[in-house]
Image (cartoon, rainbow, N blue to C red; front, side, top):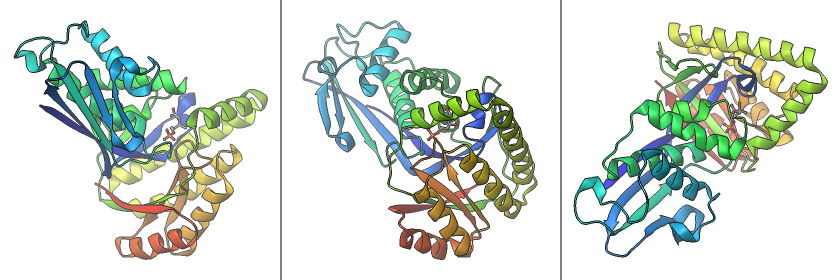
Length: 320
Ligand code: PMV
């Protein structure tokens, strides 16, 4: 048997601008995770059991562009292992048996918490280990990025990176991975609008805006780059309460990019009114999640206010 787990993630600063080469900061959210278990079975074929998405199917009955099937087919291909006949797990036992792959995830789908990337990372780790060919973090990350590309077109790669390394990252597309040292832990409340919004669409809308009004959008991205840079110093120096104002500023730029929504804006307002030090939407936008920076004792009241303002759920997480 082989098991692997990968956390959710949240983008603290720099979403969308990161697609245009500016820095962004993302942190893992360990309260939610994707878990994958691969076991050898006596029945033939590769069976995928994913109760969250109501899936109980043999691999070859799924369309080849199915997200889970794509990960598995691509992994077999990259490892140079033909799926027929099936190799034995960990290189032991006789050939030709089946696999059961069980996938459970507590990460809400299409809400900016990285559910797709987390499933890819956990699945690649569990399956490659089961096949006796465990991959390094760098290989897992590169693989998960290719899968993100299949689904999102032009992803920056921030999701797969923060999730693979399960550590806060300062991310610039195409640059070597920089993990962040957190000088002093801080607390975030994540509020879910409950609206699932495809990242591909908001990324496409920002691109249209950038094409139409290139000068202004480049200025906006540069301002956001400054925010991410300052945030990095603040996080490393251990003065996290100073992040609040930067979150407010970043949110205003995301509004200008048209990727916020009335629901996100009202949760952001509710968090600030309830005593958060700052708040912003997070991720692709239009729906999904917002985040609020709070002192530890304010986590509960801010969380209650978010629920009262329409959040479908909240998660309190510590960045450490
Ligand atoms: O997948 P989400 O919703 O966390 O958003 C990804 C962040 C974007 O900057 C909007 C897109 C990207 O590829 O970086």
